[in-house]
Length: 569
Ligand SMILES: [Zn+2]
Image (cartoon, rainbow, N blue to C red; front, side, top):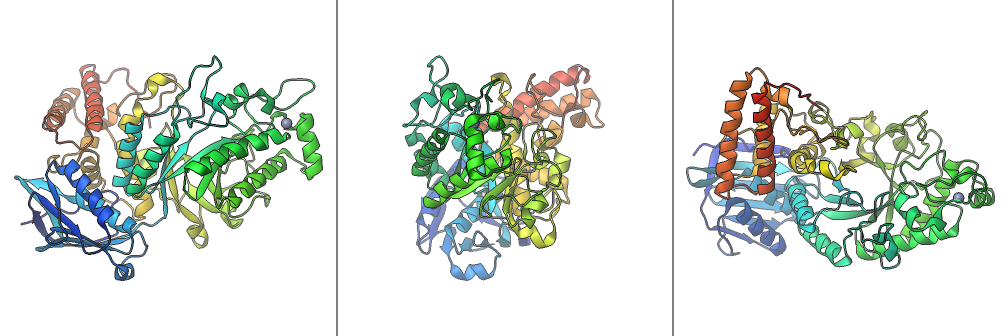
């Protein structure tokens, strides 16, 4: 029984396939030789969801077996690695860890193919492991809180792409997205109205849900910048300025009330989130903020020997570091306000999330680079803006050629200090433009995940897009079906702070087709998606619905022969 290649995303590191296929019959029998019961339960859920078939758990008689096996570690280059063998006896996955087994399970559900009423998986041996250990994506509930069920769908999508971190940006100018017992006013707006926030119970539910899928949740309390909402609620945390106006977006670091406030918030976060790392933000506080004019900041700077506002900030970071260290937590922060041209007095075990060197006039620029952080012995998570900002910055061209240890410039001998990367889904301020992540993330997450998992260049873009289509929609899609060819690219446009963005790359979608030819193809694709949805044969109905909206928009563009449409990145 011949088989296609194993077209999954991220692409496996090594696959020695025979060209034959293993046939699996429903109900699928899944089991474990030893202590992998929790992962077997996850595999059952995944298989049922993907295939609509019944799954039976049986350790005696199983088509798919999961085995914790220390010996497997000699075959893969990372403890998250796994070995998968598929032959006439079925499929067996071995890994030294539950994380590795989970990745193997995602490979099984991603690689299953439905042909003529049969379920098949390519025969052969796969050895697979990640190139980097921090593989994350960030959501921004401070600006746009998602209902819990939608966060769970995002977690499903991320786990399917073998990511292992979800970063929640909880505090910003707009709101605090976590219910605070110590500061209940933080969960209200200026008129006393409730601002949406996750309760402790909801977060515990998310942590459990994500943990079961191998994803840990990183909380971020962004200070001392992005503090509009905090200062509106607690004006006493503003600077004290004799003449003129104190900053309305940056906390006063001269008063111990700020220290107490931040430490109390962090205490609540530490209590709730078991993850070993806590993000404290640190980005984009205004260099021209009122620290130099504030009597309390001035007094503290003199007392602590801080000669610049940067040193005033580092003192604050060191205090937070001490608090976190006392609670066995590692501090993580954004890079842009650390003047890395100098040797900054910031603890070297801080984990730095690099997104870009500060803009001119907004922070230190001269002599700053990712490379300098590595020379200063920091570990770095790479969220370089052109590869990681789903919102308006990333492009297919750039992302496919990127991997976290390549750009911006990273010397080989320092590459290991870049421990991974994180995709960032900053929510737009305007409510009406919010829907675009529903279109963009189902492909952006797996493409980004591939770049963290497998450093080999993507040579065959066509087959990658086909694999991505199966990844986003599930195993029932027809062979060779490529939704992204119709949408004009694998990265769906997302710009639209002030106006809704176009939901597809119209001109790139037309290619050399006439508008009429393109329109016919859109209609065919709509029909394919429609019948899959109708038969309950798409894994993520909301993704199929979003793509149908894109195609309907394209039909309209084709009717207008493309007039008035500009392709965005
Ligand atoms: Zn101050």
